[in-house]
Length: 500
Image (cartoon, one colour):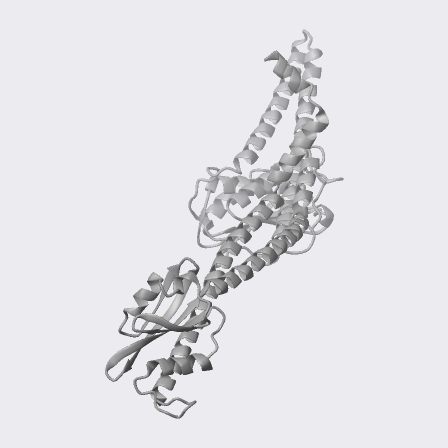
């Protein structure tokens, strides 16, 4: 066992690399594609060559059969004329003369033999040199001499297949002889086999050439996949910027585009996760530092102890709120986040207005009250609108106006909170919905972590809705939650002023 381990450990790395290289070459995609191509081509060629050979043999049989019929028909015409064209005298019962004239005037085709039989014996033939199966004493010839009716068929002999046509010659009411046309088709079959062999050789040459071309073409077609593999190997948690170059069109280009889009989403998710961890760590580090610093300065003065205790409890409450907000955002992605019920929009709007008026001393106004019902989670929706109202109080002062309202359309309902504060710069209107986002130079006095609007957006999206913002610097801001009347629907407005 030790020796085996030593042998493996002392193996040449180059040899191991070459071994794995050949193994990868054998199992790579284009090798398998080429193997299937060759297998299918071989099967197709084998089937095609077999069919071609069969068709050619059938054509040979048909042609020879037509030759047999033609010879018999020519003999029949001469017999029906009844006169010897050389002497002008009728044949009468002289079947030998009939055979003499026909054999002298007809030249057989290749492989064809014209045979005449009188009184059961071979009389004459053309050509005179006959193969063994057609010799005068052969069993085949004896069998044919006993026939009394026209017979056409095929028989297997020592020289191959023989197609024949036997025609009895009847004169004076008696059979005087037999006229036989026989064709040994071994030569024709040999020609067919030669043609088939040529087809096989040409096909093999073409297969080798096309296989090389297919190998190269498959490599070029699969090159984007290798690029995908190389790019995937180069991607790590610290570098998600690599993208796969898109070449051409088709399925591979579509796959490359889809993978690039997936990488974009992954990069965005990892970036968001990293920023989230950094921001969360920063938000938690500050109260922990404050608590630690005051506890380290703890003394025996009861008044100082009380102040330190109140400060520590306040910071712990802030940390608790922060953790609760994080848990809420995490739950927003679950299926059981919402508990849907039928909500009357009019009474719900009045309840909301009564609740938010207690948040701060402002000029609270109820803009509009919709009449209708909606399928929603009353508590989550209350939390979202209350967050918007709280956000409005933090960006306004005493005497400023905050307006609450609701409206309903054919497919969706909306709830808005509008304030007369300083407004939001257009450059920051998308960023404020990000987690831990705070506006620069804002008059906001909240000690929160910047998760309020993120929670509002999460609740709206959980209802298959969205949050719209309409604001200009110096003209206040309006946040509107737009959700479908039924969460199963997905019909939302696209213009920010369509619900104003």
